[in-house]
Amino acid sequence: MGYDIPSWITGGSLAAQTEIVIHELAHDFDVPGFVQNDAGSAVAQAINNQAVLQNCGDVISYLSGHN
Image (tube, rainbow, N blue to C red; front, side, top):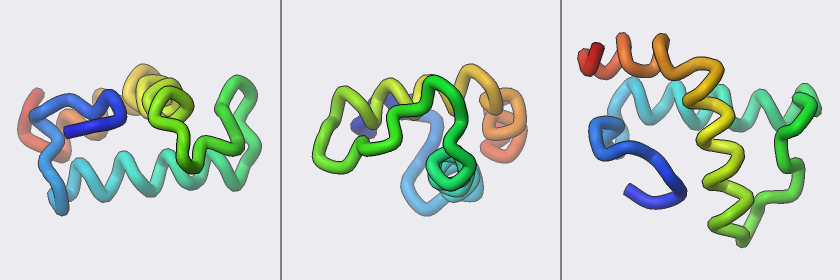
């Protein structure tokens, strides 16, 4: 997968959906350090996805059965 999403998060899975929701909520809540305008920037989206995985990766891993 692109944008620095690990291969164990597969498209359409509950883990992928959870990562997307958390990513979008981080935009809505103006989370400090989160790149607000990441549209069209693979680098900015990768930075944001890594922040999501760093802070919420345990939950996403659990939902994927990857734990």
